[in-house]
Every structure is written in C-alpha cells, then in structure tokens.
Amino acid sequence: MRSFTYERATDAQAAVAAVSRPGAKFISGGTNLLDLMKLDIEQPGHLVDISRLPLRDIEELPDGGLRIGAQATNSDVAADPRVRTRYPVLSQALVSGASGQLRNKASTGGNLLQRTRCPYFYDTAAGCNKRNPGSGCSAIGGFNRIHAILGASDSCIATHPSDMAVAMTALQARIELLDADQSVRRVVITDFYRLPGETPHIETVLRPGEMITSVVLPPPPPGRQLYRKVRDRASYEFALVSVAAIVSAGQETIDEARVAFGGVAHQPWRSVEAEAALTGRPATMATYRAAAEAAMRDAVGQGHNDFKIELAKRTLCRTLAQLAWGAEEAR
Amino acid sequence: MSESDSRATWAASASLAGGISTEVERGRDELAALLAITLNVNGRLWHLEVDTRTSLLDALREHLRLTGTKKGCDHGQCGACTVLVNGRRINSCLALAVMHEDDEIVTIEGLGEPGDLHPVQAAFVECDGFQCGYCTPGQICSAVGMLTEVAAGWPSHVTADVSSRQITLSGEEIRERMSGNICRCAAYPNIVAAIRVIAQGAPE
Ligand SMILES: Cc1cc2nc3c(=O)[nH]c(=O)nc-3n(C[C@H](O)[C@H](O)[C@H](O)COP(=O)(O)OP(=O)(O)OC[C@H]3O[C@@H](n4cnc5c(N)ncnc54)[C@H](O)[C@@H]3O)c2cc1C
Ligand code: SF4
Ligand code: FES
Ligand code: FES
Image 1 (cartoon, rainbow over the protein chains, first blue to last red):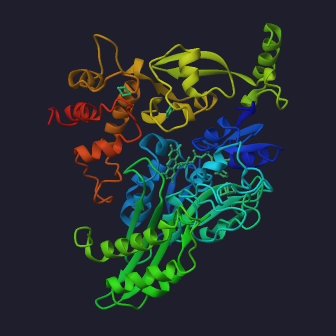
Image 2: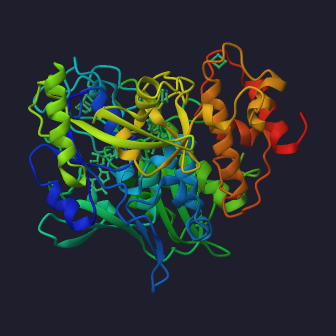
C-alpha cells in the first residue's frame, strides 16, 4: 500500500473542504477502499475519515419516508424496525450481502460507491479501461462469466456489485449530496449511476469532492416487496443475478409494479419494460414470463455469461410468483 | 529509515493537532506518515506509534503482540481476523488502526484465558469446534458478536420474515450468520454444535 496522510473530519462541511486537496479521498467503513488500496488499485495520498460524522441516524420524514444517514451501517439499516416493516426489500437485500462482520462496518454511502468485482479490474497486470483508461478491456473476449448483459459498451462490461442499491432502485431512493462549495443537491438513484460508455472510470454523477450525506426513501409504494439473490454459493458471495420487486395486485390484475435487477449491468438496473408488462395484467405465470422477456429484450451475452439472460428471466418469474402465492407455492 | 529520521517524522506528526499526519512524498515510503495513537484493547490503554497504513489487525499482532487474532486473507474474505469493536464483530484486516482510537476493542485474549474461559470458548473446547485452530479465534469472536445480534433481534438472510424480531437460532440461522468465517479444516459441524450449546444450553 502507498503511504498516505490521515485526518479525522469533525463535521460534514470540514470533510468536503478537506477532501478538496489533490489525491484525497473519503474513507467510511474502509471495507472496499482499503481492500483496493492494498492491491494498489486505489492510490489516495490523503484520507479524510468521515466514519465518525454525525450522519448515522435513520429519521422519520413528515411524508412517511425515511432519511438514512450516509454513515448508518448496513447492519443498522437492515435491523431498523421501520426498514424491516415498511421497506422489507431493503432489509432483505442488505442481509443477503457480504458477511455479518462486513455489514457491521460497511456504510450506506460506501456501499453505494463500492467498485466492481471484475477480476481484471483487480489484476493490475491486465488491461482495464476502468482502472487505467485507454488500456483496453480484458473481460471482452476474456473470462466474463460475472459480467453485464445490459447497458455494456465496447469499453467496459463490468457490473455494479451492490445488493443494497438494487433495493434502493426499486424504492426510487434519492441520494443527498454535499459539494465542496457547501451546496446541497438530491439525485434520484436511477440518475446517480452512469453507464460505462467510453468513460467506465467515471461511475456516478458525483462531482470530485462531493460527499453523500444521506439517502432518502420516499414513502413505501403500495404492495408486497421481495429481494431474491442468485449466486454461486449460498452465502458470503456476490450476486450473479438478483431481483428487487414490489407488486401491488388487486383481485384480478396487478395495479402497480417496480422491478430492479442486480448483477446484470454497470448500475442497478430498473426495468420499466417489465413494470409496463406487469401493470394491468393478471397475476399469472404467463404475465411474469412476458415481463421477463420484455426486461431482457435488449440483453446481450459475452460468451461465458450468456446463461445470465435466462437466469435473470427465471429469477424475475420466481420472485413475482413468490410475491403472489408465497414461497412454497412458487416452487 | 534511520532512528533520527523516524523521530523527526513522528515529532512533526505529533505536533499537529487534530490528528493530521505529516506530508508524504509519493513513492518514498521511507518517509511514511507516522501517528501516535492510543488504542483501548481488552480494557487496557496502549500507546503506540503507527504508520497510517497499519491495519488494526497488524497493530494488534505486530505492535501489541496480541497474536491470538489471525491473518488469513487480509482482504475481508475469511473472518480469521474477527475482533469486537464496541461489542460488534468486524474484520480487523479491513480497518485502519488510526481510525479506531476511542473504540473499545476486544480480542480473543480479552474474552477469557485458560482457567477462566468465556462460555463460547468453553463450548468450542467441549464440542471440539476446531481442528488446526487457525480460524478459531475469529470464529469465537464472531460467535460472541453474532449472539449479541440475535439477542437484539437482527434478521438474517434466512430469516423467513425480516419484520419479525423473534429469531430462533436454528442450525440454518447459525450457518448463515457465521458464513463470514471460513474454516479450512471444515470443522463446521462442531462449530455449529458449539454455538448451539450456548444458544440452547445443550447440544442437538
Ligand atoms: C469479501 C467481501 C464480500 C462482499 N460481498 C458483498 C455482497 O455480497 N453484496 C454487496 O452488496 N456488497 C458486498 N461487499 C462489499 C461491501 O458491501 C462494501 O465493501 C461496503 O458496502 C463499502 O462500504 P464502506 O463504508 O466500507 O466503504 P469504503 O470502503 O469506506 O468506501 C468505498 C468508496 O466510497 C467512498 N465513500 C464512502 N463513503 C462516502 C460518502 N459518504 N460520500 C462520498 N464518498 C464516499 C470512498 O471514498 C471509497 O471510494 C463485500 C465486500 C467484501 C470485502
Ligand atoms: S469489464 Fe470494465 S472493469 Fe472489467 S476489465 Fe473491462 S474495463 Fe476493466
Ligand atoms: S484476514 Fe481479515 S477476513 Fe481474512
Ligand atoms: S480449524 Fe483449521 S481452519 Fe478452522
């Protein structure tokens, strides 16, 4: 690891001011940043510790929503009674990620900004446009079993690894940001992440030095919620494919649906196509299959990851079936 | 680095209030940024001078000579380095020592010692919850943290209804909640048995 200087920020304003010096970076839980620094992938010369900032609370909002402080740990959010009862999809997504130890350290802000698990991104001997712009993409034509099937480019086919962000996408969370000039803005999560295009090293709309201060969950949408994650081992493993779904159904038809996929793209992937194919339709397997086809219409495999297209479809069908009929009947 | 260089760097860093360490020139690691810190480990205050890069794990093992905590992967992937920070289990390999001033850190040495074992340590001995023992300190610290999480009603990935605060610590729940601790000897059946002893007062 390269050496760096360290300071502990005393308040949010001081933190954004401190991080404006060249080579400086925020550190929260450190579970992604330190991992990458040990491998010489991230090379900050100065760390601004924001883990003790008073941004840990989860507050009730007048409209029935919740504001989650950026320093609230993944464990705290998953265990919060309001999240568990009103936003179960978020609790489920959080507890499906990483391990008990990591969730105790991982912060809400850091989780949103964790970097891809593409093995070539981790291998400093390999070409990788995300790590080293202009050096090519080793995953295209390489081992790409875990890579993207939607929204990829000729420059990068990496996926975003977060589970939490997928649930937040279905919930249409808004991310609150504090800029170095002390201005504040809010960005809907679906506008927060960028597709790789020709600049895969730029992953979000975050400005240099900008800090995530909180995530706002709008009041829960009507209906039942479920997060389903499919992976190579039963626990402590990233998703191959995951689905966050929220469905409100009447006697006859589905009134409203939210669908987001994880593990399929450079960002958590909201499928408005699937949502449209569900709305106003009867809650039957034929409807779910049509929604799955709609969601994956533009999907493209890279070879090793071709299986993900069918896997994503089946995972969506199974999730929707479980929401409608319960876990046993959906088997 | 020579003794006098090291002192000079340390003095410079110590003289700056607010914990800002000395300026570092890139690539010249001999000018490492050193900080004087105080850690509260196992109820004792330890004063040490560390390179900012020092992980909590290395501070415990190399500076404090508390070698019970083990290094497996150094990347958050195995759990061998698990310690308790303010009662919560974390991976000490993905933590910087300088970020843990003002925290209460407990390692395997602080849980109990021969003749005065922590109940979870005793249960691991009783149930043969290990073979080589390398992962064991991490397993035990993790189990202690995990039992606190269960007592607080935290859900897990296998909890059928995340909104329910009533957690039954079944074998499935124990395995899921302990999945952050890998055992290369695969002593898992007896690790689960040891935790069951604590959770239910009797082996299955
Ligand atoms: C073995 C292992 C398994 C894992 N498995 C999963 C999994 O299955 N699912 C999953 O979703 N995740 C998984 N993770 C990733 C884990 O969730 C992330 O490492 C964690 O959420 C990052 O949070 P942090 O607070 O530690 O971030 P840090 O490491 O502190 O920071 C990450 C990045 O975000 C920046 N940053 C942090 N906070 C802010 C802020 N408030 N404003 C602006 N920038 C900020 C930092 O500068 C850094 O660039 C796993 C990690 C490991 C090591
Ligand atoms: S997929 Fe993206 S992250 Fe992976 S090698 Fe290609 S450019 Fe790098
Ligand atoms: S050494 Fe820390 S998790 Fe493996
Ligand atoms: S007892 Fe040998 S690694 Fe677990």
